[in-house]
Structures are given as structure tokens and as C-alpha cells.
Length: 273
Image (cartoon, rainbow, N blue to C red):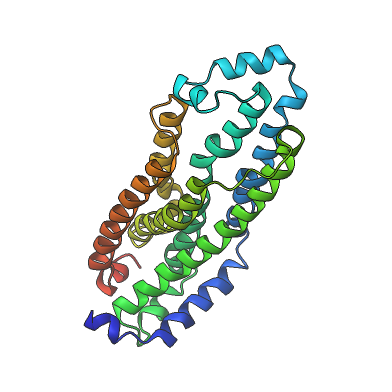
């Protein structure tokens, strides 16, 4: 705590501002920050929610018959078209949505450390008056705040998309639900923190942004497992499941960030120059 009280936040935010300026000039990071949220928040949901109007009754019934029994039970009493819209909007895209903060955070963090090394600017940064804690905080906060801002915008875009695309079937606004609010408020910040904690550890030890970003792809493995769990009916994204997921994600994120703080320092960074 004494280290936090002594933090020179003006210097920390100056580094964050510098990293943001660099990211705005990076086509690779900008494409990650814009294309990935657009894909998962607008394009795919809009296409999925058009299925009831494009598919015939027999095709729609066949698709619904492939859903796990626990999910079909949730929508007992709804028409086939309503069942599809509710399942797609409220459940199918929840794991995909978690990829947005992960990919944004990992892309930003990879560029802010490995990118510094690649651009030959890391050595100059290490000789600034910032302490190791202040430098670590700057790299983490830059990625985390960017991931949160992009994800919140993606959530708003997703809400508009599914409500408009689902209106012909539902005849009302039906999104967001309590589970989705918990997902955005609790799980998304933890997912972003966990992803950037992992990528900071990686990018501090590799030579290029591309290498760091490539190795950071492992952070989506838990999301893929959640996706398989939902497809099989083992995991259903209700409020209690999302709450438990958020607590586990925060515990993992704090653990990884703590390990990263202990291993992040000038000696380790200078050894890779």
C-alpha cells in the first residue's frame, strides 16, 4: 500500500497518453480494436437473428432440436422464432463477447512493451525517473482502460443490434438482461485484466509485437472452453453462473497481475534489448 500511496500518477498517465498516441498510428492494433468488436457485436448477431425470417419452419425446428435440453427448457412456451432469437441474443454470443476485452487488452499490451523494444524506444523509457511499479501500472492501465472503453461501446452496439434485429419476432425490446449486465460490469473488467496480465508477462520477454500477440492468443482458451460448455448445455449464462465466473476471473486476474508485478522490472526488460 505504501508503494501505491507514493505513486506519481502524473508520470503514469503521461506514459499511458504516449502509448495511446502510438496505438492510434498502428494499423495492426487499430484493426484489432475496431474489427473484432464490430464482428462480435454487430455483424454476427445481426446475421444470426435473421435466421427466423430466412429459414423455413422445418429448418428452424431442426436447428432448435440440436440445442441442449436445458436450453430448450428455458424457452418453454415461446414460439420457435422467439426461442431462436432469445437463445442467440442472450446466450450464444455471451462467450464470444468476452473475446472483445481479451483481444483489445492483449493487442494494446503487446504493442506497448514488445512494440517499444521493436521501435528501439524501450531503453529510453527505462531510463526515465519512473519506478518499476509506476511503469508497470502505466502499461497495465493503458491497456485496461482502452479495453473497457471499446467493450462498453461494443456492448451498446450489441444492444442496439439485437433489439432491432429481433424486433420483427419479439415485438419489444428484450435486451439487456440481468446476466448480461453482470457480464459487462463484473466479468468483462476481470477478463481484460487477466488477458493483459498474461500478455505483459509475455511481451516483456519477446522481441516483436507480432510474436507477443501470437503467443498471447492462449488467453482465449478459457473463452473457447466456455463456448463448448454452453453448446453442450453444461454451462448456461444465467446470473448465478456469470457471478461465479466473475469472481473466478477476478481471482485469476489478481494472481496473474501480482506475478507480473514481481517479474516486471528493468533487469528483465534490459536483458531482452
